[in-house]
Length: 134
Image 1 (spheres, rainbow, N blue to C red):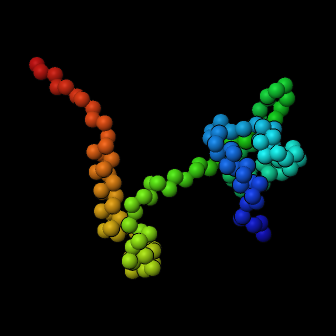
Image 2 (image 1 turned 90 degrees about the vertical axis):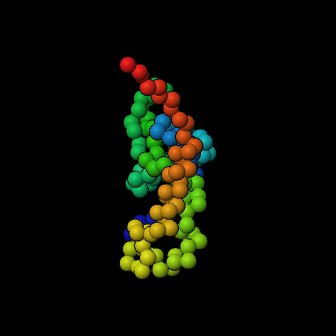
Image 3 (image 1 turned 30 degrees about the vertical axis):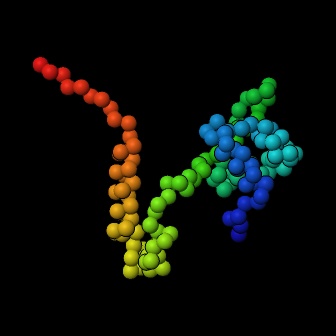
């Protein structure tokens, strides 16, 4: 049974790759940034690929065949949850799919989403559309 936890070095490698987004990095560039040997770097890349966190794309660079490491995951921006009623909800202990309360029909979440929607509409830049008169 394979552990689902990644090592500190694998985590560091993934964080580095996430900085380069869809472009990714050549594996040799990653090894240099991590300060590891190509052997250790290859093992890290293979483990991350097996976990579905990156893809290794064959590429001809610097007069030789190598691999470009591209992240398949995206960083999660927690700011989208700012103001959510869930963390401080009095019904939190009884909330879930098979519980008394459920996020799918929660009035508090609905009100929060509606207020967020209105806030975004107000902050949107209005487009000036002029009517053509006949």
